[in-house]
Image 1 (cartoon, rainbow, N blue to C red):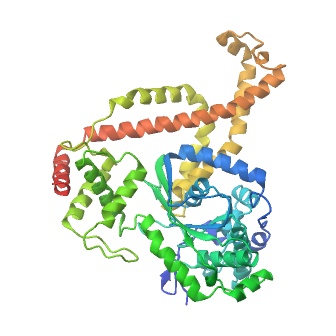
Image 2 (cartoon, rainbow, N blue to C red):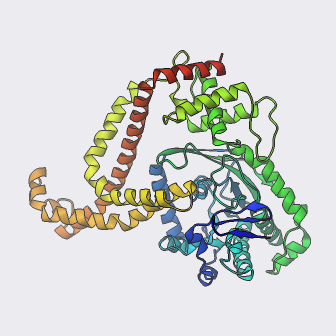
Image 3 (tube, rainbow, N blue to C red):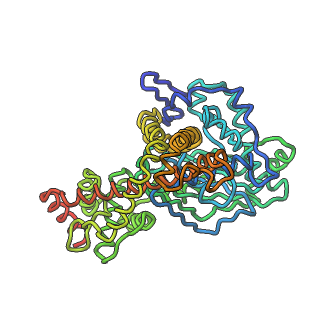
Length: 530
């Protein structure tokens, strides 16, 4: 029985709190949702080939600026061919989570998403061309966004389309938690992804295709809400299905174009297998404070051995090993708090650093509490700043609106901290399409009206527009097109200069760290590595 608490905009269903809905998620346009284009399976991509390839080319460009480092690992070889793959991860970073999987798995994907992602202005235009299928969640249904019949019709249509795509060898990403959240551990395991996978397996069996498999995915962000954070995508060992788990009546039904729900016992068995594997690919800590403590202990352990954790991937894996080897740890879901004097010391030390924007990377070698700035990086930092200064006029005009819009939307969203970088990403993605053509036209007009001054400054004379083109008009066109890679270069230069600013700020903080707190930090570190 659902209970609605309108004052706090909260709801529970079967004793479980449902996610708070954003204003956008509350607006349902059921007729438009039912008219969403269905994916096709006879080509290399489920949607429009042109718009899919263009979208992902742009997504890769934006991601390379948004993240400072990106890495991936696979427990088994990933292939573009063969059986379909249902990828399931924990969900704490909005759009960045599925995009992280799309960009690192070799398959093309059929995509299911929250219903409003296919009806929003601009974003909806793109998602429909990528054949994204809208899904109504329990929270929207119970809050009266649509009738049960409409939700069943839409979800049945979308899940059958996704299942068909998986059966035909495409990938798919669904999150068993059902919503993006801000916990340091997984919050629930719903059955939607498993039911979709079993339906895909029945379709595959009916059409003599290889059975799809389930892929647990770890999605790790150093600080998910920060620009230029680090990302690590980890593909776990696939969970295979066997033909005996697919009942004959289900195969016969989907073979006739019908639908039969998979047996509940089978659904729960596959879900439980996923639940046994996936949490290990997440922080899986009781609190974020405990998470920071484990990462500090991993750094302290490496420091004591005379080494350093040089990458975010190394740090994630080292912290996981610290947790795995914790004395008397009892595996549970959700995880129980770890206990012990060393954890308390690590937590105090980690929070001392956290309060000043530092972390385990800022520890010095053994015998030194905090590390000093690396002079070896000084020439590169100077070059990055000079390059940005040279391109600053282009960066200001081409990126200024996007940065302001991303900051405004990210800081004011009603969807929580987990959606902040999603809005920043969308501002960069759509800003490139909408703002850059206008700014490029302005720069081209400036060059045209000042062509004599440009010719005198460069020494090319008044006819400089015709040096590399047949006429002034074609020269202007070339100049207009040249603006776009310059804008891109200015964005990369801005990102590099931002890294210098962040690194310099941290170096200054380490140098000015209060002596009393530094002594306390040294004492706590000594308790970790006596």
